[in-house]
Length: 394
Image (tube, rainbow, N blue to C red; front, side):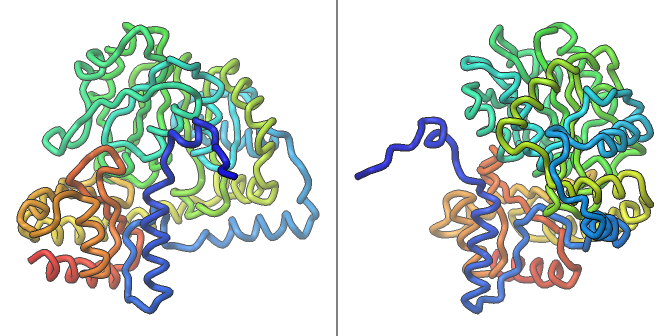
């Protein structure tokens, strides 16, 4: 008997980044010397004081259920972080702690969107931004920006994409996959368009906030336009900043009524995130922040090396990142001159087989002809990978 899956499941795609990572792991297991530049996670270990907080929680028996939306201690740590680092004031009922920032975004969309609603998604986009609205019955509306605008949309572009069905705008700065961030002036331009449309909720995904070097300090859209605070949801987490991807703690702050609805969704799905991970996250947010400065400096060094290396290859054009640990080169010139390679997916397969380097095709992020490269790996691996790419594409 053939099992028919639900239309909502059939309408979405599995994560292409995880698929590339899995294929690279499969080839490595078969004995191939694969350098995987596909995974979006820091290669550093979680800082010791954070691991110790988790160990202490286990020893003290703090392994039971917590409140579905996160334990009070962690909500307070999140509120303190928002106030201290972002100048944003949230009460406990305005904060939701989830199983990763992706989970926070999913819960928000399930709580907000109805069938027929539209979600405005600037492209290039993080892969899940396109499929999560579909799971809520909504329709993603893509607004494209290329390398000529450093992958950033303008207020005019946004205004042209708004309809009477527009319900949510996704913003991600610094961006996965491009590594670029919006300046204060650019955010003001976008905010000016949003002020004219009070029914649109803004979700600002700030998960790469701390991995930043391209501007003096981090700003999101609420910082430059406080008028939007009452309809903006700020999403963040500990995964990227503290190398805690596997701990699965994300959080959001926003309007109390919307957060309450998102928490209700969470209470009927996962319930609370891991109690041990929550205690670790308290230590991360409240503790010594030296790790962030040190790891960001290393990412910047790697970025500079990768940027120069990519731009030295004929047919590759790469713009500088402002943060994260990604480069997003335009490789259409390479595609045009390689026999038998007619798109970025084929190029990714070619590089995996011929150069033994795993990259993620840009089409997964809404940008055909590009590739995403993660430099969250050692400089030794990066030097070898760039040399292999140069040889394979020379």
